[in-house]
Length: 249
Image 1 (spheres, helix red, strand yellow):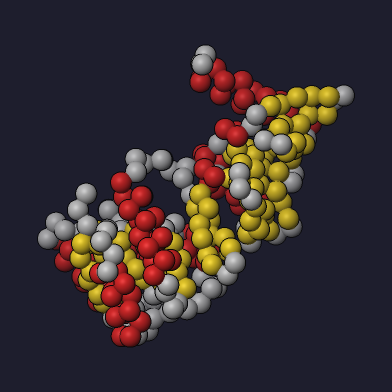
Image 2 (tube, one colour):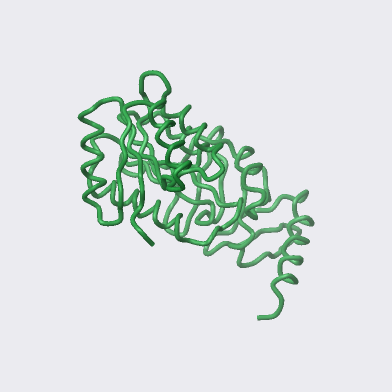
């Protein structure tokens, strides 16, 4: 794999120079293009496509004069071969936009070299890894003041918390401002099913289903999750079909 061809976009020259400098210092980067606004970025991207040398990733500021980063990100998502997007911003209130646009990462200014290196690693991984399929999704979460992304494949089950949801992974949990119903719809194709008004579970992570005194529960690791009566038959049928499809081990 040759080095990544990337584009840095920021309407503040010092910030643009800083990001471009850090990008050029990374051995995984082959070429760094720069643009001072969204319109100039689109022209560069169009030219790159016409030359047959498309840009792999765009490191994109959000609040810019004229065409802002969120609008530009939506335009990029419509490309036939959209570049990966990494948002670079001084503001924390656009994580939901990053989630909707499936950004690879969300960096806060001033950008720390180790966080930029992590973002480049994510871009390289998504560029070289086999396609997981349309079910792959990411959600931004806050960890010690740093925004990171959790993929749907890491989530074992989701617990409702009013208008929020708590994502449970093998290593911890994260509270996000997304209703459980929204995740149920978004992750249906990723193998997540509603088992209770308060729980959404990933079928692949279910270790056991059992019924005791008319009460149905599923076990995921050391956690037992209740299954409501109305969801019991559907869940049991799904697990049986999944087991048949998998075949004998």
